[in-house]
Structure formats: structure tokens, C-alpha cells
Image 1 (cartoon, rainbow, N blue to C red):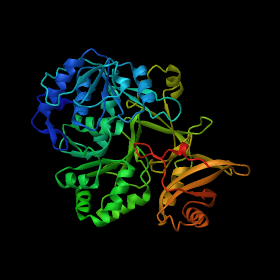
Image 2 (cartoon, one colour; image 1 turned 90 degrees about the vertical axis):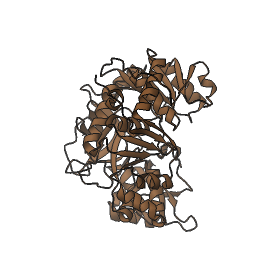
Image 3 (cartoon, one colour; image 1 turned 60 degrees about the horizontal axis):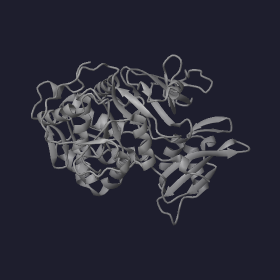
Image 4 (cartoon, rainbow, N blue to C red; image 1 turned 135 degrees about the vertical axis):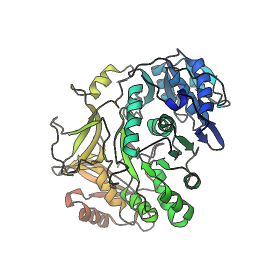
Length: 480
């Protein structure tokens, strides 16, 4: 397989590759530092990386990949039980960390190697095959312990090249983000993406609207974020002319990891004239779809399949959905070079994730618009509500609720109902807790925008919705 990072291995330049706060490395410096890591871990198989939002994490992962090994990013916020499971399952021999990082007792049995961001070594890439593992990334584990998705080098290259096509992403682009580096969004797209293109990434360390404004006004051209971040941007825009200027001048604003509410789309577009585009992926598939840079940035959709990716919707009985009508709901299944190879040590789970003809069952449910745009309506397990003979996606109801001026946050679930099968329940964080919009008002609001059978039958009010580190709402924590 050719190099994942030609700009690092083919006569690296003095152009800045990585910047974390005040610390930066050129391509030549990164090649030397990653080369030193590579010399240290060559032949190690799987290598754990203590994935803090720091320069050393990027150097560590690139060094591991150059050495032909597989990186296992560790979330520094993982609990002792989860961390112990990941280490037993992936069995790394070495953990890479920044000097001075305090590691938890679960890592005591591993050889620790401190990453020198200014180390010197020769970046001599090992011969590797397309199917060789690049990363083992652990899923969030909403049911049972996390599973290690083995992501081959082929998938990393295919996804990043497909995104380059969809987003017109080149070595001239400078990306800014403040995402964590232990998952696909922040690490693969946000760090390895710019490095594969020969461009630059500026990591904020911790997300702030001030940091976004500073970097976009200082030459950055792209912004990656999750909905929580864009919500904060939307809230700050009316009083921050520097932020308005920054977003107005950006080439591309990309949101992912969860659906961006239509209300925030519209607020950002109204203030800046720029539309945020969304894409859709997951740990096991990397990226599947995206709104294209030269396409219509349609709020509420995740665009069209990326080059090389096949996508279909499937009914519960296995029949393929043929109606591109924006209404018929089915589970998304995908096939292509972007897919993982297996769940580590879980052959039964791997086999169960794929159909006999090689389609991956995502567990996400969606509808297809007539022109092929994909509109995700939720997770099959938690967001597909069967009420009164209808199959209803929670996501579209949530978006409708968020368009009400009295609603700050909203989540929708189903609960058993003797008459309807399931009734629609809305969990609402009101803008004014002292004077929340009434349940009847919200039900009518949804019925007018969508259809009467999609109105919530019950409204429950909360101070905040439970969310994970990526800003995704944890619906299993919502209960009556």
C-alpha cells in the first residue's frame, strides 16, 4: 500500500502540519518526531495511546502508523472498569503518553514510552498491506462492554480521499477544531485528514467560540464541530462581530457525530450567510455520506453517499426500500472500502453485523429524499417509534420541537401504550423554566409542521438533557 501520508514520507517540508495552542510542528519536524516513535514501537503489533488533546497524541498515532503497527486510542475520561476491559481485549504491549501525564493504575502493567514532540528519527515506513490494521477504536458500548472496531489502512485512505472529493479538500486548507482525539471524528478526520492532504490542522485544545473566531480570522479555512459546539456558536453570534466575520469567511463548516438541529442551522446561516454541512459516519464505517461542497447544504440531511460507498435502506423483514419519497423509513446498510474488518475477539458480533452479501447493518434509520439525499431519523433501537400503525423517526419530531421559540433542547422517545402500541414522549428543556410552553401548544406545533400522528402525546420538562462526551443525547438515561 502507498503511504498514508505522502507529505511526511516524500521529502517533508517546513510547512506547519500541526498546531496545538502555541506549540507547532512542521512536516519535517513531525516526520522526525513520528519517526522516533516508530523506531520505538516497530514490531509492537497494537500500541495504546493516551489520547489527550495534545501535540503528543498526534505524533504518537502517526508514529505508530508509520511503523506498521495499530494504534489503540484511549479516552482519558474512561472509567477504571471500561479501561480495564479495553486493555485486556486489545492487549497492547506499550502505552504512549505525553511526558508528565499521570496515567491511571489500570495502565501500570504496560511499558510506558513518553512521546518527545521534538524527537529525531527516520520516518521509514514499514511495508504494509491495505487490510493491515491502522486503528482499534472502541465503540461507546451502549449495550454491553465496548467493542474494538479494527479499522484497516484501506478504510482510512478510502474515507479521507472520498471526503477530499466531496469537500474539495486540498493541501491549501487549514482546519480548526477542538474535538477529542480518541475517536474517528477528531483523530481520523480532524488530524489524519489534513496530514493526508498535506494541509494543516490547528487544534484548540478546548473548544471555545473565541478560539474559533481567532483561528478562522487568522487564516484557517475549515471548521469541524459537533452540534453542541455549533449551538454555542449560534448563541454567541448576535453579540460577537468577530465570530460573524470568521464564519462568513470560512470555506467549509462541517458538523457531525449527531444531528445538528435545523434551528441552529438557520441561525448560523442568517447571521453569516454560510451554511453548515453535515456528514454521516460511525466508528465501524468511518464516513458514509456527506453534503458536498458543490451541492445543496440542506438542513436536516447528511447528503449523499460518498464516492465508493453503496447505501440502501432495508425494512424490518429484509426487503430493500425502493421508495425515495422522504417518508418511508428503513435501516441504513452500507458496503464499501470504508468499512472496518472485524470486532476484535468478537467473531459472533462481527458476523451478526453483516448481511450474507457483505452489507453492514448500521442500526440507524433514515428516509431517502427523491434526489438521493439521506435524512437520518434516529437509531433503530431507541429512535424508531411505532405508534398507531406508523413508523416514526424521533429525529424529525425533535427538529420540529426545536423550532418552537420556547424550547432550548428536546429529545423524543417512545413508551408503551395500550392503544397506540407506543406513544410519543417529548423531553423538553424550556428556554424559560418559569414559563415553559404547554404540552398542548407543543403538540399542535409539531402536528402543524409534520403530521398529526407525529405529535407528542406526553411532554416532560427537564433542566438539561443527559449527554455523553460527544454531545450525543443518552436516551437510555431518560425514563418516566
